[in-house]
Amino acid sequence: MKQSRAEIVAFVGGQILPHEADVRAWLRRSGSAAADIDDVVQETYCRLAALDSVAHIASGRAYFFRTARNIAIEKIRRARIIRIDCVTEIDALNVVDDEPSPERVVAGRRELGRIRRLIEELPERCRRIFTLRRIHGLSQRETALRLGVTENVVEMQSARGLRLILRALSETDAQDHPAGGKAHELHPVRKRD
Amino acid sequence: MSSTRSASEIDDEAADWAVRVDARGLDVERDPELLAWLDGDARRAGALLRAQAAISFLDRGRALAGAAPSVEAVAGRPNRRALIAGAGGIAAALIGGVGLWAARPQRLDTRLGEIRRVPLADGSLVAINTKTALDVAMRPRSRRIVLREGEAWFQVAKDPERPFIVAAGTVRVRAVGTAFSVRRGDEAAAGVDVMVTEGVVEAWIEGDPAPRRQLSAGSRIVLASAVSPTVAESPSEIERSLAWRNGEIALDGENLEQAARLFNRYNNRQIVIEDPVLARERFVGLFQTNEPESFAAAVAATLGAVVNDDAGSIRISRGRTS
Image 1 (cartoon, rainbow over the protein chains, first blue to last red):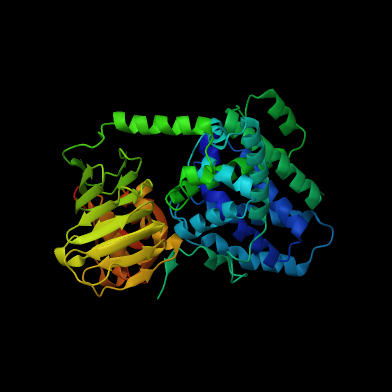
Image 2 (cartoon, rainbow over the protein chains, first blue to last red):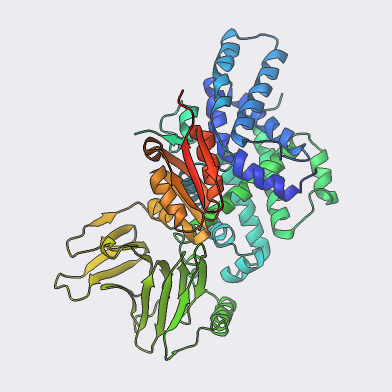
């Protein structure tokens, strides 16, 4: 059955996007160049955008890793010269798929902290508008009214803020991932003493 | 083969479109201008989905609402129109049933699993957690809340003339303009848990000669006796403890026994961890307070546990030992 755009967007926002930094880190470790990583991630979102329904995807994280891996392998096959280490690295990283990642489980606090940081790092004016819109849930009109500016200004600043945040999301930030190289440990679902 | 630069240009354009879709409610499948843009490059559909997903992702930050500065503080000096809008909000709160200078205290309570946000007559806001009862008395010179049982979080409107005091048993917490939560333990001996999310509060035990304690944002204290130490908590840790204001339980390394106790505060259907080893397993995740089933399913999927449930309980035990 076809799902609404809003349902698909909510799924991607909740189950796919939060794992983008991990997927990028993983691709980087497998030896992909930065431009290739951008392409692989971009292509993954394109494939999701082409879906009528995401109901069949049990785990967004596993889907993201699997799809990115498939796209990366296709790219390698298309390339004229196959780097042996590329193939072995990617094969070795196959295990990522098996990571338990139940639908509803997300690394709650880490994620909230990340959202907070993303918003805090925006320039002052942007940040104020973003806080009112996204944290307090005011409409564009209400935000404009509160700040005594036109709706147009709110829209422009929102777009500016979102551009900056999209960029920040594609830069795997060291803050989030001090360990750097261990994708399977970044969103632990199970902790041991 | 695309260059990084053009990919980021697509991202920028996608951000503009996503904001327009969000603000104006454009129909992604029908808006002719948007469709023309999407048709221009096969990568744009993916970029738009990602930008929209980012907005949706950020909306999860609403769970942080309590930690964020109040709307007024964010807005800076309000202009005339904003003031009028604000006055309207207070008027609405009054009409909402909380009378000004009500002679008798007003009782606010919640049933098991219920979470309410109630604006008070003075412009303060109270978020009331599950199974809680409190009395609100607004007087010309004071604002007094008596927490009979349970837990509540207060965002206090500034009014230096009228101290805002919450009483929980013999514990008193006083604020002028700030935000904090107070929770009474289930057992009388358990003490009163105070967490400060904004500003400074003063806490003391009635009849105790010890000096009053000043608590600032990010600190937490469990007042059971005068010697109880103040615990500094990170803002995110306090936020996590207050996730209930959005109907959520945020687990970050609690063991299953502690997690079960959290869920059991909200639901008739009680979670029972049947195996002592399993009960010590730690867990991370964000759940709805009223969905203990999702939690049980996640535990089963992650730890290989077995779930047996009936109308009254959800029992989680260890799977076959391997």
